[in-house]
Length: 123
Image (cartoon, rainbow, N blue to C red; front, side, top):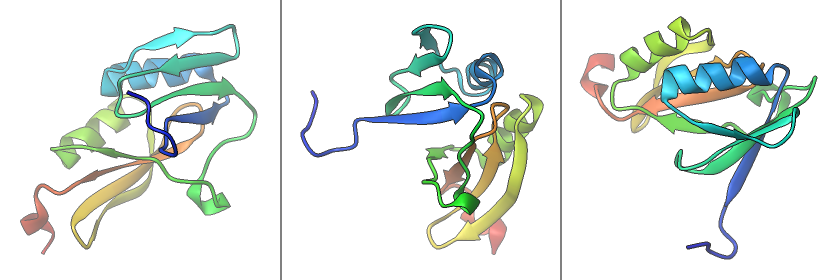
């Protein structure tokens, strides 16, 4: 059910839509529906959204919003991101309530992954 005044959809720029789709399919199991050669959408991934062809990218260092995914095993997800072609921009670090890392996907946009599991390892 759609709710008024709630975040409903998110869009990311990507320099390489094919590489972005392959990365998210391989690493996170996402599926996509193409809408022409310059747009692909995903759904049922916690929040619906899409990637659009762009020479620009999204980065928190440039003031962009940071989308953060959840993982129950942060180290395993970090390894999958690296193996899938993602570039780690911030290694795992602790913050009150959890731990996270940041990565750049092959299309150039930054996301992060966090977990509340394993907090005792970071003490």
